[in-house]
Length: 226
Length: 175
Ligand SMILES: Nc1ncnc2c1ncn2[C@@H]1O[C@H](COP(=O)(O)OP(=O)(O)OP(=O)(O)O)[C@@H](O)[C@H]1O
Ligand SMILES: [Mg+2]
Image 1 (cartoon, each protein chain N blue to C red):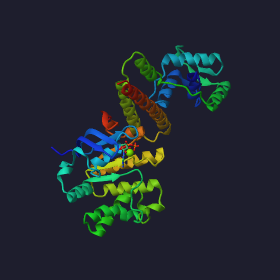
Image 2: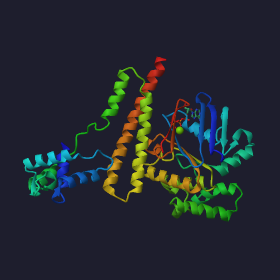
Image 3: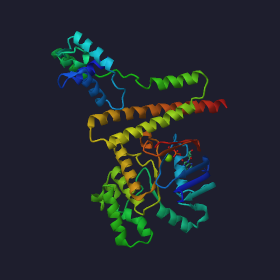
Image 4: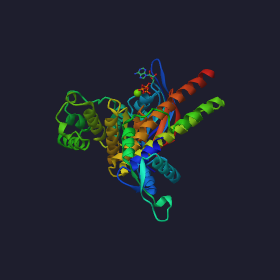
């Protein structure tokens, strides 16, 4: 039996003033595409950040590719996150001073890959997502859509088991959003990665195999779409 | 009554049998309700009466299937007028969804389960339409029809989500 890409059990998370998650459980199979939807403020981003190991829940467990994040040392958790989880956020969270190629190579360099191999892999991914010609530009010189493509390349370059995307089409118009989504799906399929996608856009949610709808920090319903 | 004008449109490329008109309609509008034969023939005879189409060839057996119809000049002009006139925005197929939800609320039942089911069935349909477009050859008009349906389903979804929010809030305040 292969491990689930992700498993959350009764996860709770509270900020200083707001309780954002009140016991959320979620399973994601390898290669599965899951859309997290729900009204603004229902806890979608908090859920994604807990799942990706960026936030640490106050209660419940998060297992990434079969490993309980709470059981790992800080260093091992970071390593697991860097190699097994890719993250794409609404506004390309690229390093502004680095060229696209260096941005995409960065996760590999942090993992100790040699510079030449990292740059070669980065070039391949930039070509694959259609911004190969912009490899030596910095993010400020490019459009939101181009940066978003580079962010997809950066999320996929380590060959993660799961990709987390928070409103990846949020800053794009509807046509560019759909193209972005097609690209993201093609990219995760290439690497056999699962995709957990936060969106408030129903046209984007309709790309998923399954929808998990949150309301006020709990799962309101969950349905298969495929 | 747009069926008449559509029939005129289907004859614009040249005279045809009623059967071809029906087939043409169904090909123009994949993922829509097919045009009934009966409706094609009653429409064609009404159009003939009004001088918008004429019989080009009447089959020896005399049945309506054997008759070939063509556009008259008047029919061509009428078609052009219709094509240039914007439609009155109105509810179409979604009437029934609204009626069900409203009736559910009026009868004192909980509509949230229906709304959730309707939501998933809409999402599934958008997915299917997209898959159909991806599989099909680049048949742009058919794709435009699917896009039209998908965009309207998206609008329905906005309405469904709003209805869900209102009904859930109402339940919470009553608790
Ligand atoms: N950094 C933060 N500090 C304090 N409270 C926060 C923070 N981030 C989120 N919250 C609160 O937690 C709750 C859930 O927020 P979250 O960002 O997860 O919602 P969301 O579903 O992603 O909303 P949106 O669709 O608007 O992005 C909200 O009440 C929000 O105000
Ligand atoms: Mg959010």
